[in-house]
Length: 570
Ligand code: ARG
Image (cartoon, rainbow, N blue to C red):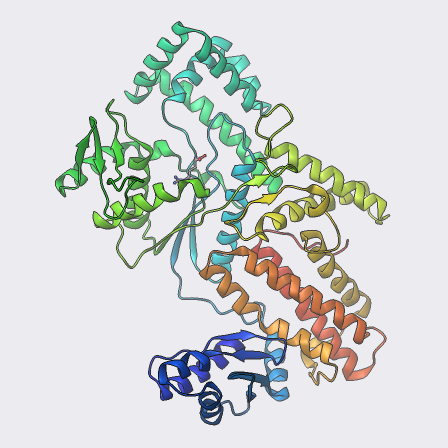
């Protein structure tokens, strides 16, 4: 069914249109009424009339019979209040709808490039943001019925592999495998780096090894495989610990595009887009200049004949559009790569590989900071291991559960602690507008109160506890009189769910869903204060239980879209 918001916006839009074709109301949920539209102000300006007059004309004309009453307010706002019968009917429909009013979109294919850690390098907090944001978007796209193809574009190619393979040989295969199997990727990488910096002979061997790798030498490829496979196995463990939906099939690393790179260069050349600059093969897409106003190159093939990162990304665009049939390409990649991705998109559009009908969006994000508001680092200045942060979050969540004297067996409590820890870490990340930086502060993230993941989990568990204690009731027979304003406010909040998902996906902005769920939890608190549930009787009790059920399911579905579990008890 169309959402309440869509119904209101649609009817208003028709009235605006009759007054001035193409004029649009701007509708939003409001504290004053249920919804407020302020489009009359802009329209009055174009028409050269008074805003209140225009608003009054629309209020007269708009067809909201049986849906809402409308009133002109302030300088020319339209305040809309839903009719009780309409509200009751909507809620009754939600009671028997697993998706709580969320419509299935005509399926589009959405390719989401996310996580993308580098082989033989520890996953760090920077990978965290890409992983958590990307996975939330993947879950939400699936929830609205889209086909999601996840692409874990792992860094598994390039010059560092010469040094990494030589280091593997120096350590001896067995020892190297042992080191990598226990997840000591940093140790391995630093060992390679140290040898490279200290020893000219090692550097020579490394360079020769890169050539052998690129030339397809069998033994070199075998050694390279060992590094890739062990790293991917390690990443998989972290994904499991984070409860992230990425699988091994989603790992399509940079090396997967090797065979397509020649074609990229050849086709760009045939299109006349390729130019030589400083010995490198480049494209100069329109609109990109440096500070001095000179055109900026996207380097496709380097002077040494090696392919650049850009060539791989271009090959990936072609694969995703041509072979996978993508309607949308999302890149959940840090903000520093904004220009790179914009240039890749511009070149791909120019070359005809990225039709205008395909959306290309860089879902950029900011940094994770330490308490000093600088990039989060360990005391010795290294990047912090993601797995260490997670483990610490789990220990602290467990301690908090012990302190709350939660009545659970040890294994169940440990599992709950892991769920709470994941909720804390993911929610703190997702609830920050993604372009902004945030401070990694476990104490704040793990709090059971405030704007946190555990708070929302708790709001859900509390509802579940009420519903359990109520025993078996046939909620489908509930009717909604909504006498108390707190009950009505909660109902209005529940109707906002489909729009919260829609605005979240439109902006690839999970913080909007977080804000929606937090607002719902706050409406619940006011509802409990004004409307006792289990102590009520008859139809009122049933109505309140039904509101609890709808709220619990909305929280569960919403948290699920963020990749956060909703435990039954907390
Ligand atoms: N591996 C890269 C890094 O660690 C991120 C890759 C992003 N994805 C892409 N298609 N370029 O910075």
